[in-house]
Structures are given as structure tokens and as C-alpha cells.
Image 1 (cartoon, rainbow, N blue to C red):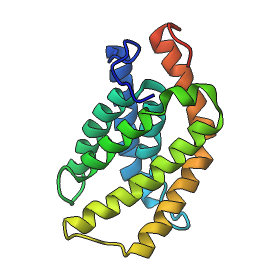
Image 2 (image 1 turned 90 degrees about the horizontal axis):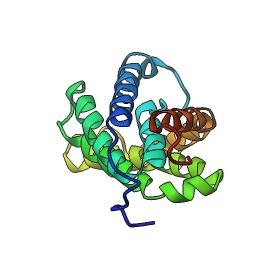
Image 3 (image 1 turned 180 degrees about the vertical axis):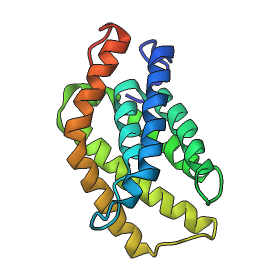
Length: 178
């Protein structure tokens, strides 16, 4: 489970490009549509959920690389310190990718992993802003937002995970079972 040097986990160019496009569209949707939603307890983080799903399917290496790249783009579109989102998304993508093999054998693991990734990613954002002296949330507010992000992730994962798994199978030419 912790071995990331398997031959099964290598960067496939088509998969990488498709994932980058999906995540960049998610960044645009997050900034333009989701940010304006009046959802109770905060807004869902579409980018974090999609990154976690892709990392679960493709593994920790692609999760970390995509997390860093998309986080850097998100940082460039925001007003906070550059690298803050890239750091959090890189770590989330890598850590979620580590449970890739368990996600293939269970229905519960993708739900738990994506929900936990959304919650931990939200807490990671709050922690990095606090460390960098730009904290907008108190500890209690951050915990409430993290719980809400986890719940929102649990709601959308049953719809997004099968779509992403099917797309991955197609991109890989059914060479491996997802």
C-alpha cells in the first residue's frame, strides 16, 4: 500500500492532460459559480473533491503532481500567498492516492477518502493561512467548515467517482481494472 514505485503507477500523457483539463475547468467553476452559492455552512470545494477522486483512481504520484499544478493556478487567481493552495492540494493528492488499492476493493473507501480529503484540505487551508498570519477563520469556524466540506464531498462522490473511473478506464484502454 505504501509502495509508490509500482509500474502500474506511471504518468500516462493522455490521463495527465485530461485530468489537468478537468481540474482547470473545476477551478474556473469554483471561482465563478460555486463561490457565489449560498450553501449553508460554507461552500463545497469542487477542486478538492475532484483531485481526491482522481488521486484515488490514478495514485499518489499523479495526485501530488496535479495537486501542486492546480493549486498553483488557484493561487495565481487568488489574493493570498502564492504556494499556499499548491502545498495543501499536493499533500492531499498524495495522501489520498496512497489508498488507491483499497479503493478498488471497497465502496466505502472512496466515500471515506474523499470526505476526509475535503475536510483535511479545508483544515489545511485554515492552518496555512493561520501560520502565514492571514487567518480569516477561528479554530471553531474552521472545524465547522471542514465538517461541511466533508459532508458536501460525501454527497457528490457517488455521482462523480463512477464517472471518473469510467473515464480512466477509457483513457487507459481498459488495460487495468478500476
